[in-house]
Image (cartoon, rainbow over all chains, first blue to last red; front, side, top):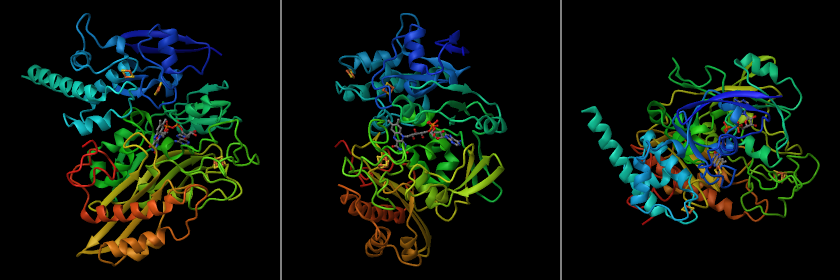
Length: 165
Length: 351
Ligand SMILES: Cc1cc2nc3c(=O)[nH]c(=O)nc-3n(C[C@H](O)[C@H](O)[C@H](O)COP(=O)(O)OP(=O)(O)OC[C@H]3O[C@@H](n4cnc5c(N)ncnc54)[C@H](O)[C@@H]3O)c2cc1C
Ligand code: SF4
Ligand code: FES
Ligand code: FES
C-alpha cells in the first residue's frame, strides 16, 4: 500500500510517496531526499549521529518513523548555513577544533543548535556536557565541542540582544 | 524488520477501535518500539500511530491540587515545566536522568512507562527468552546477568524494568487513566506492573486495546521540599540504572511524618519499599534509621546471578537518597540529574 506524506525539509515543502511503511526519518533523508549529511552510526538511538531538528527540537532520526512525521518541519545539517555564511555553531566548531574525523559532527552541531534553543544549559560547562551526552564522539573531541557550544551560545545570545535593542 | 499495516487515528475512540485487528500495537514516539522491531524482538502486524490524537499532550492542574499529565506529553516537556519541577522535583530529576536530550524530546510519558526490558537476550531473537517466546527458556539465567533482578524475580525470568520515570511516580502513588474496549478505568501505577511468576510475557495488567490516556498525581505539598531521585549508572550520563531510588519525606518539626521510597533497576516493576516507609514514619532523620530502612527494603532480596553486589548497592543508594531528601530539595535541579557525583557539594565529576 503506498503512503503519501508532506514535510518541510530545510524550508522546502516536499511531498513524498512511500512504498514501504518501515522507512525511518533518517533513511528518508539519506536515501530518498538526497540529504546524506545526517549520519547513521548505530541506527539504535545510542550515538546521536542522526540528530536532526523536528519542529525545532533535536531528536534521533533513526528511531523516528517517517510516516509518523507527516506535516513536520525538519532541519538537517544541510539547512543551517545561510548561503556561504556558516551557522554560528558551525563556525565555532571550526574555531575550536571540535572534530577530527567528522563523522559525528553533523549530529553534534544539530544537537548543539537544539540545546541552545532549549536554553537550559547556559554557559555552564557541566550542564553543557550533560546536555550533549546523547552525542558520542569516537575521536573524543569533547573538550573542543564544549568550548564551541559555549562560544556559539554567547554569540547567539549577543546577536539576540542586538536584535532586541 | 517485518512489514506492517499503518493507521493514524485522530481520536482515542478510533485508536481503541483500530486495536481490534490481530497483532496491533500502539506507536507513540517509537524510540523503544521501533528499536525492538528493527531487531525482530517486536513483530506487530499493525501500528496504530497515536501521536496525531489531539488533546493527549496537556499538563493540567487539578482543583484538588494535583496534576493530570496527558500520555503524549514528551519527557523533556514535563521535566522542564517550571510548575511541575517545583511540585514534583524527584519526578523531574528522574526524567532528566534517563536516556539523552534527543530521546527525551521525543519520548512520551505513556511510552516510557510501557518500555520493555533491556535484557540483552530479550532483544536477541536467537536467544531463549520466556518473555519474548513463552516456554523457550531463559538465557539470562546462567548468562550475562549482572544487571538483572534481585527482588521479585522467578526462575522463568530475571529481567528488570528499565524506566526511571516510573520509580518516583510509584513512590508518589500515581494513577494511570486507561481507555479500553469497555470504557475508561483507573489503575494505581504500582498495580499496573506484574511480577514474572510463571508468565513473564504478561508484564502489565493491561488488556489488548488498552490505551494509557493520562497519569495523575496527588497534591504535592507534603513531599515537594524533601524529594530526590538518585541513580547509579555505569557511566555518568546516557545509561540505564544499575540501581536507583526515589525518596520523598514529609517533615514536621524535625521529624519524618511520612516517607515514600521506591527502587528502580531491581525488579520487573518499580519497587515500592513500604516496610522501610513504616520504619521511617515518626523518626528523626539520621544515618542509623536510614540504614535500618534500607535493610528492611532489601530484606527479601536474593541474587539472580552475578548480581549480589546490587543488593548492597541498593541499600547504600537508599541511605544516600534519604540523606539528600532530608537535607532538602535543591533550589535548582543539579547539573547531573540524579548523579551521586554531583550531590557531593563542590565536587565536579570531571575534576
Ligand atoms: C539509547 C537509549 C537509552 C535510554 N535510556 C533510558 C534511561 O536511562 N532511562 C529510561 O527510563 N529510559 C531510557 N530509554 C528508553 C526511553 O525512555 C523510551 O524508549 C521512551 O520513553 C519510550 O517512549 P516512546 O514514546 O518512544 O514509546 P514507544 O516506543 O512508541 O512505545 C513503547 C511501548 O509502549 C506502548 N505505548 C506507548 N504509548 C502508549 C499508550 N499511551 N498506551 C498504551 N501503550 C502505549 C507501545 O505500544 C510500545 O509497546 C532509553 C532509550 C534508548 C534508545
Ligand atoms: S531474563 Fe526474562 S527477558 Fe531476559 S532472557 Fe530471561 S526470560 Fe527473557
Ligand atoms: S544513528 Fe541514530 S542514534 Fe545512532
Ligand atoms: S570527530 Fe570523529 S567521531 Fe567525532
